[in-house]
Image (tube, rainbow, N blue to C red; front, side):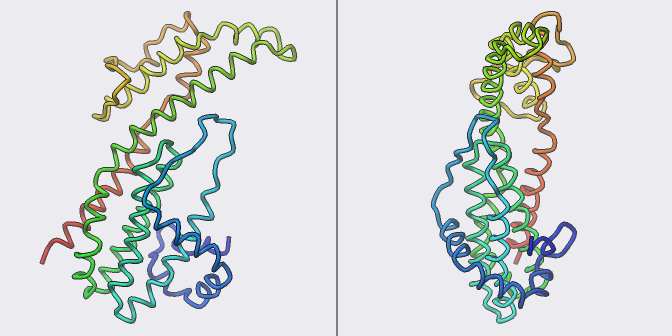
Length: 278
């Protein structure tokens, strides 16, 4: 909570870090062990998403890593003021490369969106660095450009997270079906759950995923061909009503996720073009 007012939305991150140097230096000392562990995490060569497919499992706490990221980046203003551009940009690259690996290795939407948010922060920070320190451009072209070029293909990462989302739906369906044997549930609920057709529901959900992906020009091997219509709008709810209602309630509207990924892709492209110019 002691970092909640730094690099907030709509607030220039570099200026925010620069204006809180004494406080951030104190926090770096106070959390030196965590910061060391965070720095070691950034150096890991790969990211393996182990998010549980069971939706009842606890969601990992991302806030500590995100706050440690701010502390890790908090030395940039001092380095930049001392014209240590390469050191500052290497700090930026280490941060950005890890979160790029995290995006590429994510099997869940939540991990992908967390990684994307960190990439967005890094891009905004680099833009501010280039504006405030024009002499850093040559070093940025050499050090930062490869990362920016690699960050222009995030949309494909969404496809692999969809597999995880589908597996979570399958786990949910199985769990719900098992509830039909609970004596403490009202008889009407047990009857409806007994009517739930798991395979038919998963096939219906598959059609929803495939249709949503096709609408955005994406395909996923294994899903098969997509219907030409929105399955939820033309569903026959007389057959397997519970499964279809559940499938449509959990309809994966990818627009918001693609918008966020496209935002980072576009800012990466714009920064790369800026650095490529003499």
